[in-house]
Image: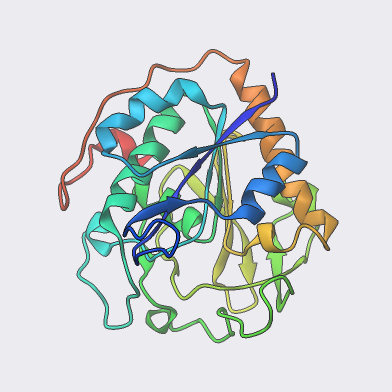
Length: 265
């Protein structure tokens, strides 16, 4: 059986012309195709109450967290910055619980843009709500060039899994205004832009988590090294699926509630 890759759905908050309904769930076609091309079978998970996450766990081998709205700062105990973008708390609640349960169940995890930020917040990290908060940020991180084109380089740590896939200084696209601030204890930064904005993270003690700040799903058709990120993710999912997982725990959090210390890494 090919590795099953869960993709939590984004939410279209405006009414669609097709079904004339608000809050329709959808998954970006480019990400779905990248998973298929890499040998995985995508499974789209609609936004749901976080207590339902435990019932999804056995249906997939790896989970891909994609881009979208800003993460609500309540989840890392901050009030909204004046430049915070649109947020959608139901998706945040579902994805944060999905990160935690997937980690406990031994699932492979890959994050893209917002996905990297969600992973960091779920495990106890914080974010710059806008890069204007980061005094070191000087580069253009929200490009106006077409989204499939690279616009800046990143510097990759030589002892990382990412280095084996992309090398020392890959050329990437960029479409974000939030960024990782304080890393969760179980994660390490493995790539930086020239202005030191964190561009990729990995889990410290395993190959379970990898996440990047750029959008390889928009680049993989023309830049083969970006396809390697998805191939590696599918392979990690297949490998981890053969190992005995820990049992998932049913934990539901209220907005603003402090997370148990064991989830901080």
